[in-house]
Structure formats: C-alpha cells, structure tokens
Image (cartoon, rainbow, N blue to C red; front, top):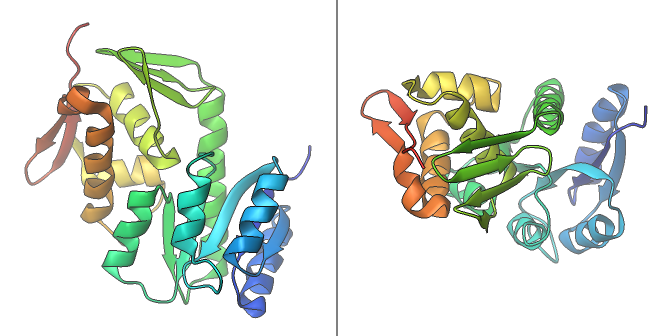
Length: 227
C-alpha cells in the first residue's frame, strides 16, 4: 500500500527534521517546506497530500494565511504548531478551519499519535455512506454536506462533529465524551475547543443550527425536526 504523504511546514530546519524523522519511522512519506509560500506551491502541485503540519510564525507568509488560502480549495486535515500557546492563536486557527493545535515544545510521539488519529478517522469516514437528519444530508464518502439541498462547506473537524451529533441524535453528550470520540484524545483546550467548533457549525448550518441544543453545565444534544 502506498504511504500517506504529509507536508511539514516550518522555517526551522531542526524542527522539520525532528518531525520528519518520527513520521518516517511510522511509515509516512514527508515533504518539507521552509515557509508559507513554498508550502502553497508544493500543496497545489501535489494532489496526494493527506495532511499538513504547519507552524504559525514563519517568514514571507504566516501559518494562518497558509490555512486561509488552502481552505478556499481543500478540506485536507491541518495540524498547527505554535511557540506561543496563546488562546487567541488557537481560536484564530480553529476559526480558519484548523483541525488540531499543538504548542511547542511538544512530544514527537504525541504528534505522531494525533496524526494517526486524524488520518484513521478520516479514512473510517470515507468507508461510510450517507446520513440525513431534518434537512441535513452528509455524504460521508464525498465529505460533503447539504442543508435543504444547498451545499455547505465544513472543515474536517466540523464535519466529524456533525457526523457524531447525527449518529447520536437525542442523546445528551458531555464535553468529555465529545472530546474522546471526535478528537480521539485528551485535548488540553478542554471546553472552549468544542464550544468554538459548535459555534462555527451552528452558524454554517443556518436555521438547522438550532438542532444542536446546549445542555448547561454538561455539553450538547442534537435533536433534528422531522422533515
């Protein structure tokens, strides 16, 4: 089987080598880019990239601008790295469609585990078919969403979150349970990670966003109206 290809974007050669070495040990093919402009050139010329790991602070073009450009054309999973670890940076990244956020310094083994988790979940989603709920239609194979027949663009993580809500209709879901099942690891951002994604998802679903009910002090519950 062909190895999955990952694009690593960081202006520090030492950091790129560290990440690349660990990924290669786990049988991934790795392409490197030293700045944002080089990353975009590589990404748009290589249609087989399965995931991007991108630093925030870089010369020529920062990581946020890279994500913004890519998200106009692709839902490829993106993990962002930052030396700051500031909440505002995380919220900015999630708002642009970043799927995971890791602050430096980090354990390469943890990074690899998160890469494997997001790729495993994206591959498992691809093996499913279609789900419908109250005018919302998820085409799992094509990774597309329609609301009352109108296409809606979701990030990878927003799509997974909606998928989880629909497959657990009417069930009260704690934030911890959502983290375990959608993020697939203990995420240190805790509640704000989920709340930020739910807010964006509700907005993109329009009136159907009301299907996602807040359970104060606990989490959320998805209840669709019969269409």
